[in-house]
Length: 274
Length: 361
Image (cartoon, rainbow over all chains, first blue to last red; front, side, top):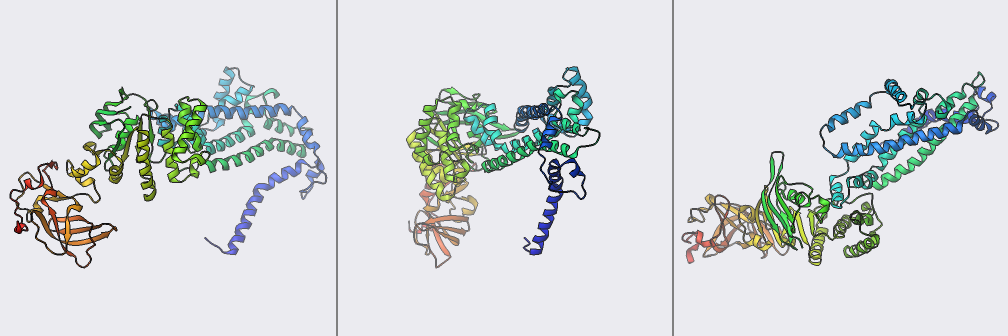
């Protein structure tokens, strides 16, 4: 390894630059969300506003049925997650551990769905939802994502790594297949499950396209749609209010990140078993 | 309580016949060791008894129940795996308890059993640790405790000591022998290590290429091998097997049927000077290597009949490479062209005991 001090300094500067690139927009968003509208227009931008305008948040929150949006978003993101767990865990176990006729074919089909973008299939799904009378309901936002090819793939890989003897030991211990899944496989795949849960939650929490297509009333709209509506106030864009709304949108994700990070580390500590 | 019987058991993996028409009885309460080189079908046999593989044909009986189609969990057996196969996300207590919970044993009873077993194997203070916080020997004990706690009719152990270092292996070997005495349950133990087989088993089943070579007690296995394979497998070092052709200068008068002659390393006398020894096979040899083990010395010597091992309890010979080795005729073993033992007493296979060195007789 290079111990050259110059190298270390360059390395440090490089890392700082990277962090700045990623963090600057975020810091700007936070800063803007506390400014007056006038302050948002100042050039060069002021990083720390004169007064912290907390009322931007209440203005944003009260500009529409944000509690409803927030609840909808929570129900949709968590509902999707629950259904995904319920489907991907047994599917991944079957693909990882059973040899059945056509298992390769079905796994192949599952993988192919990974390559199809949502924009391509929204029309048939829309028609299906319409046929079922589920349009403009939370079901239309949840059901299409009830399973995840990505999740099946990820979890199958991790299930495949569990040594066969563990399952044999469990079978000798009179464990049913379901108990093997829940008591042995799932705890061992905890880091993968948490990682997947994080991806899934963030993707669906932030999803703009799908709710935009599937919903028409506030009763079933989610936060990203609500936030985007903030742009339409009073002709011009109230950047400070918009950023306050964005911050409201992002805070739960930060919370999830924070929580998941600790969990992932813990899960890794407990599983690295030989 | 439970004798194990295998009747005409055959196991094929695709076209490969791994176990060939196996007929075996493992006595109730015995410590039976299935031993053989890798790929001999010993693990497959064990796994069929456990129910982890099903035989291609034939039947397996445990006690008076035919278990051929019974699932592993219902066979009333417990297994210890080579890699321990402990559930990594569970504590030691949960590992031991898992089988009991699945058997729906009430909690109070479970607690008592875990307490009792963890006392026996010395795990009480580790009950709340996870397997990866334990050493190899401790993990092995957890695996044993997990098996014992179910009070099975049969214990099945698949090379359980092969991941331990030599010292710990010796210790666990003795602990297993004591455990078997204490429990009185049938133990079926698979290993490729003949030392383990000899030291632990009261019955040894020697397999090669899916066929039973010999079923016997350790001492019979050692003193009375059925064939060349057994003779060459058992013993440290194993029996020296010499071909008839290369022996003819030393033993010109062997009976027609004899194809191989064997002798045990410890039955040969080795000395620097030629002594007149009647009724002995005497061969002038050269020492290639000398391994001094303290109490004994193992020489590898070469002569016109081939390379062979000699074990001696005398002081090591250091001053010369040229030695004479002498084996009494009644300690020679004879085998026919099918490598089967010819059981007539040693010198009966030599028409007139008049090898070159027998001058004084």
